[in-house]
Length: 275
Image (cartoon, rainbow, N blue to C red; front, side, top):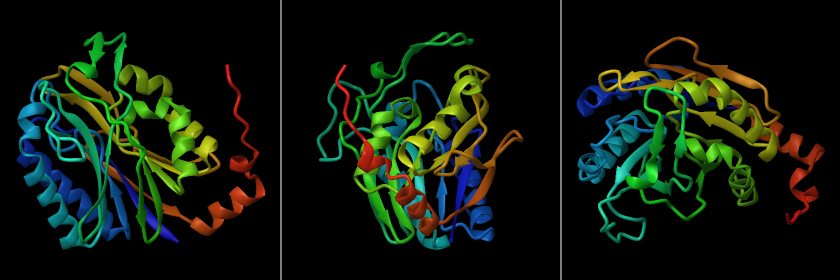
């Protein structure tokens, strides 16, 4: 049995203030026996228009997170960070950045996933429309990180709406899926819990949905929150219901999950249907 922590934050545009909250949450998770802690999207800096400025600090921020993982002997899924270069080191020259989610062990950064699906949608909230593709370059690689307690399939926020990604991660050996997110209040209220449960049922993976919550940057954007973990059969294992920086710690039983998969072998039964 392993214990995993899923974080809710109300990150703002002050990196140092956010890091104080990050370390406090790591301490709380560690005190409750967590071996892994998952942070939400934009957890180090939540500020529209500052992505490129924050991206310049990518490597120094990564080093700080690696130091925290080593200090507290805990695995970290580092939500998302804006990064000015691709995984192969090539610089993005059109002014955009990548949205990178890092999996960090107590020794090093073990994996990097760049968000594939970008949020270009119209939402009935105060912002109205979102166009991530204007700021971010999409990733193009499916990433599974190996850990001592199971393989992590890395996803980010809008990726949750695309079931085929979770199935690809499962096919590549994922035991759990992480989904650092910053769902809008409107879309989160409608679909957040349903999507976490659906992706768990599709993939027979435990799903860890870290979340931003509340108002950000002078009340210009509101996120839904409700950081949540769902069991491989879809039931909710833990949920943050209060506002602000909180976490929920949930159990993960790989042997039980493997038994569920063997009793209902969805991956072997899967047949492609071409529309």
